[in-house]
View 1: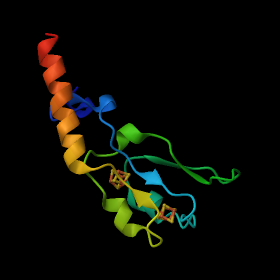
View 2: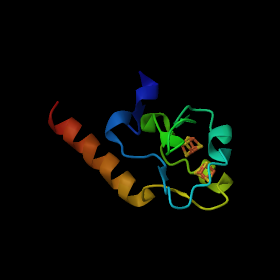
View 3: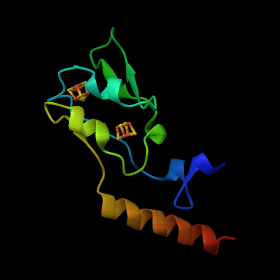
View 4: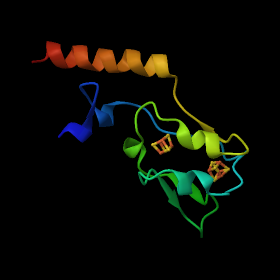
Length: 97
Ligand code: SF4
Ligand code: SF4
C-alpha cells in the first residue's frame, strides 16, 4: 500500500518521529491538538502524561507540531541523515530482489 512506504522505503524502517524532552514538556497538549495523525497518546493518570504512541504515523520530514511547542520540548531526527538512510534501505531492497 502506498501509505506504508515513503520514497520507496517501508515506513516502519524509517526512523522519523518527534522525541519529547520530559524535562521541558509542560503538558499543554498543543502538539496533540495540532497533529491529525494520532502520533501522540495522552495518559492522564501517568507521570508521563504524553507519549509518542505511533511513531510510524508521523509524516516523514514533518516537524510542524514542533512549532506549536512553547518550551521547545520536541526534537526530530536530522533530515539529511534520514534521507541518506532511506536511500540505503532502497539500495538494500534492490540488491535483495
Ligand atoms: S511532525 Fe507532523 S506528522 Fe509528526 S507528529 Fe508532528 S504534526 Fe504530526
Ligand atoms: S506542545 Fe510541547 S510542551 Fe506542549 S505537550 Fe507537546 S511537547 Fe509538551
